[in-house]
Image (cartoon, helix red, strand yellow):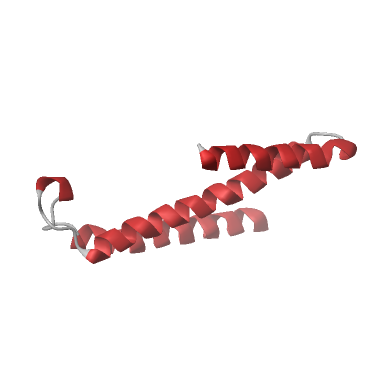
Length: 97
């Protein structure tokens, strides 16, 4: 029961942060239009876009670490270093590509 409450609190906080961060962006971009149509893009809109890109990149890095932990849990202990190094190599190849 306690774990469910923590999970619900985390989901609520995430949803609240999402609404709080995107609400200002929607209000700022009502009259700005798109850059490809020749209208200027406000600096706050560009900053919010970059914030979301950085946040998404951080989540992908943590996701890779989670995959490494899950795969390591499914293999024998003597193969754990190989599995983790393979995951890091795949992550590096993905970043280069």
